[in-house]
Amino acid sequence: MTPGPAIVLIAPDHPDEMQAGFARYVQEYDVRVTGSCVEALVTTREILVAGGTVALVASESVLPDAEVLHCFAKLREKVPTARRLIAAHWDRFLTDAPALRSAMARGEFDAFLLMPRGTRDEEFHHAVTELLSDWGATVPDPEVVSVKVISPVRDGLTLAIRDFLDRMGMPHRVWEPDTDAGRHVLDLWDGEVAFPLVMASDRRVIQPSTVREVAQAFYGAPTEIDVDQVVDLAIVGGGPAGLAAAVYSASEGLSTIVLEAEAIGGQAGTSSMIRNYLGFPRGISGMRLAQRARNQALRFGTRFYAGQVVDELRVGVDGQPHVLCTDTGEVRARTVLVSSGVAYRKLRVEPLEELVGSGVHYGAAMSAAREMEGRDVFVVGGGNSAGQAAVHLARFARSVTIVVRRPTLAATMSSYLIAEIELNRRISVRPSTQVVDGGGEARLEWLELETAGAGRQRVDAGGLFLLLGAEPHCEWLPGEIVRDGDGFVLTGRDVPKELWIGDLPPANLATSVPGVFAAGDVRAGSMKRVASATGEGASVVSLVHAHLGAG
Image (cartoon, rainbow, N blue to C red; front, top):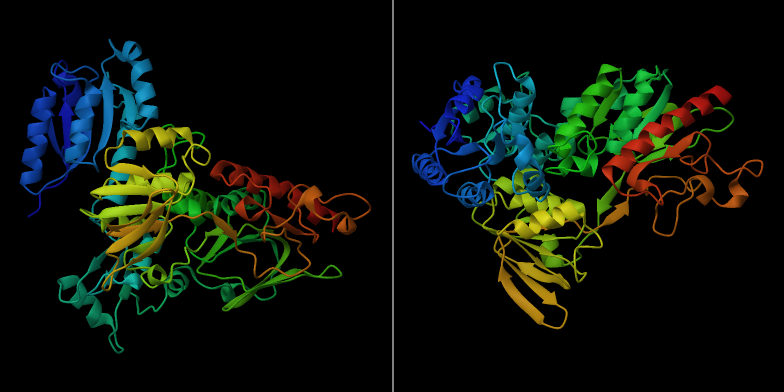
């Protein structure tokens, strides 16, 4: 039997207080107390040799045989997936805070806490459980699953389904057909067997050919809406902008529906850790942020339909509602928010396009990170999404190389991410470089890189993650909704003057069609940041009220 995950405590001066602080975790974790960095390294090695793993390392701020940050660096080499926190004794908390907090900002560890001074220190335990929850969502297979996936191979479809389930926050595992779980699901399936098979917690088994079929099976289709009902606000796109609009709209009593083509959360939902989002000092994964926002919107009455691609928007005339058309039904709405976001641009290297899903991935593909253990991985892109993906992949891969066309990352990536990348020994950056070729037998095995002034080089590659900037999802919009030369939706004063009504421009987030608004990355001039998209989505609701009131 595989040992359970361990928590390693380094407590040279206050072992009793530290052990008491972690007493509530003993039942589910193998809690080990050590007195020095060397002892912690030996203990960690023993755990790994026995087939276990370390979920968390918690240390006092001062160690007898090493600086705590140097010790964490050594432990990171042995267990890169372990979360790291410093629990300073109250005698040293204020003294050690300035230097340690700056190191935390650089990503050298995850949390700086005050050691518990008694029982039920829930602020301390909230931080610890957040770190353990983050570890549990990204590293091990879940103990309790809500979805079973049966497949003999880890092909592109199976991986895409896993990625969707990860982004939706649905615990799942993949089993081989000849396992107990596999045979159980096969017994429940009546038709001809083809893989993958997917079984939800209600024991319903489906045989999907696309991820959209999984989404629609779990989250329904808009045909379930009463055809006579006209909703107040229909939101196209369930990213940060759409989720914020859903929360504020539904909380103010407006009937609200969200149609999302993929997983709720959009591109932001693929971010392994967003550290600069207001109110989350230890950071939050995109999946968890989206999950919390979705649950909040559901609480107020929003209805979500995932896996729903909107093919057409028919603009309402003479007071008639707008109509959103999907292949499974239509939604009629008094107002519409376009928050469908952007897609990563294609690399357009044909041999690599043929390997998408087999070592080549557009976006962060969170599930694929676990498949990268021991591999050399390449991330193409210079934005925050690329940096976050590289940091997360470095927990699993042998090496991660960021490939960027610019000479540095400084112009496109936040400084906190650049600092974290510079400190991570597994991550390197290749500036002024692009991927020009690649291939492999059945899956990615090699890439050819071209660096300005240095020519081409062929390298071994076990994974390629492409985060290449943004192209808007706007091909479904009618011509009445004006866009710029790159396809982004124009709003406010950017709308051509000849389309203004009474010499007044539309409101800041209003398009050229009354009652149709745009927010987030799809809007021309947006900041392409999670926080700004959230603000725009929330701001739209007052404009919706104004439009409905005027009608």
